[in-house]
Length: 283
Ligand code: AMP
Ligand code: ZN
Ligand code: FE
Ligand code: FE
Image 1 (tube, rainbow, N blue to C red):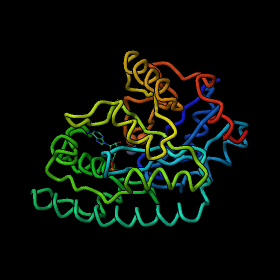
Image 2: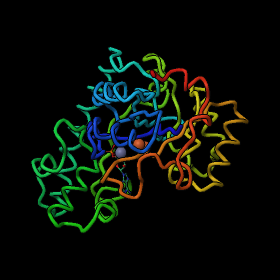
Image 3: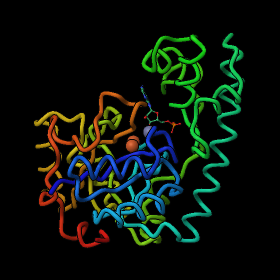
């Protein structure tokens, strides 16, 4: 009885369709799955239908990028209603911002001497994908500009690299409130990947998010060491926060992360997840 509550499909920057992802999860013996595409729920209905057919427990999810006080982070909404009107209106606006940002990234890359067009990016992206930097990376690899994704991010697309354009996002406060409005629980995604300022600790940052309504943190995560996991479990216990866990599977866009592998190379047992979260999963 294993779970993976952080996965990406072709609706954002994964490479498996919702149907392929749920089918693969079932084949691996995963019995509780969430899909958490970046800033979109477009893959949820299809995934949910397949999960129901396969008698898997399923949580509709979304991963929201947030910027503003108390700092840049990713937030997971789990157990949301994917048809919630304000959620969908907000996600549409975010997609529009993404489109504008993508145009700017093309111009910036061109200014850096890289001949790339939006058609080149669309050519490597699945139909309907919420386009982001991983698709740009794939296009740069396809054109031979770089040899792999890592080089694409180091030279051009990474947060500190030349073609990085910030994207308009929700603030953490707004993202947490939106997830709650849509009926979900809100978790800080991969706290171990936070960039803390000099005056901050994980605890101060997480407490600040808790003051905004955060329900829990992703204490189990594919790239954590056992020491990282222990630290975040202790912190969750101390602050009385819920915990969640997931791989952050992206298919071929993140080959080092296999589906369902959450804890230092091992799957995550469902019974490590809190009852309040499990209760939201449809059969
Ligand atoms: P975006 O939402 O368009 O800003 O793209 C964010 C996605 O880019 C994340 O989900 C990661 O999968 C990917 N990403 C960000 N930084 C890196 C990096 N340094 N190397 C590889 N992938 C990255
Ligand atoms: Zn991603
Ligand atoms: Fe993330
Ligand atoms: Fe993710």
